Length: 457
Image (tube, rainbow, N blue to C red; front, side, top):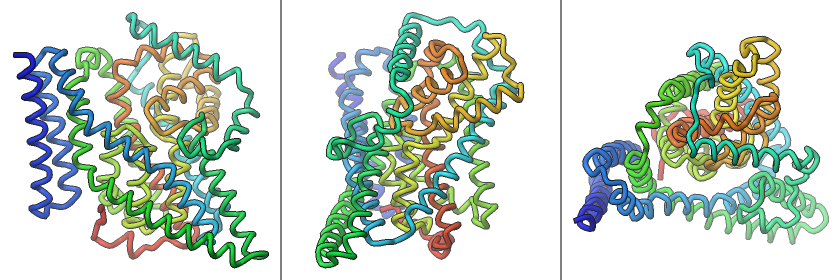
């Protein structure tokens, strides 16, 4: 009987996959298919947990269903580093823009928004009266807290000079495989150096430089074709990811910390409004920005991976928001490791404000808030855009504030749920940085930005 039940769940999921496929034959838009997949995944996963009850049956079914979701995320991660490498190298080698100024403008936007995010997270937590006082930790949470303490000890053994040096890869091919604590920034650094070398080679050996650029353009065309092939699978990946999340979530544990979840999403929504205001200051319609970024943000929400969302983020900036390709790649790449508003801004600040009263500290004092904002902004450098990045950011901020990191283990039960909203906010910030940087540099294509057509495939 058990075998028939989990097989039946899998077969129903396959039927939903075919339904999504049929929607394409009906010429329904890509965004409609993504939203439909999102809703279908939530409903189907919720029904599975409500009706089946048996966790073993659900686990067996999800083992097969996650082949689609996890497989899609792995495909995206597969193309992330080649995409970063070829795009940034090409942008510099062909002098599409002043890369130094562009990178500086992007980082300024990321630092401003993450600082605001820290303040929003702190104030939201105080308004809701959230505190770590009275929270009880179970064995799983205690183990999580001990793991965080061990990770902090490992982090503190590396001086700041060593952490900066890790951005320079001793083996660039290792960085291109995504290995190492700063693989994304290391790939960006190597690609930038290679692009500069090509730029300088034009002066002494223009023929060799032209040959390299020609081959680089061909490689870029192949990579972008691969990106488009993978992006077409987005509705199926979203369906599988949401089915797994809703079917396996522990809603009893989630209910225990519902106040923190609600406050987190209020803070996240406030930051989306801040992004909209930022766009308005530069004369750009925020509703156009969010409408065109909907499918991009929805995938970030379901996948919980800023790095995995990078191909969509770059594609959206170039094709829908009018950002030059070089700027889009820099903003997307830097945004996966620097200034993440959700994971590196709101979340660590909320934990710090919750924990502070247990240490006899007033979290609303000006001195505490200023120190929190500074440490959060500086600590946001190098936060890897995959699951667990928020935890690492919390370690850095809490230790910098002199607060115990073990208490972060109390939130382990709700981590996946709030991570979805945080990741969507992170990606929105990457998009914002690219658009604002291009606008400041005078090379934003406002015709593309303002047109009604949305290119998603």
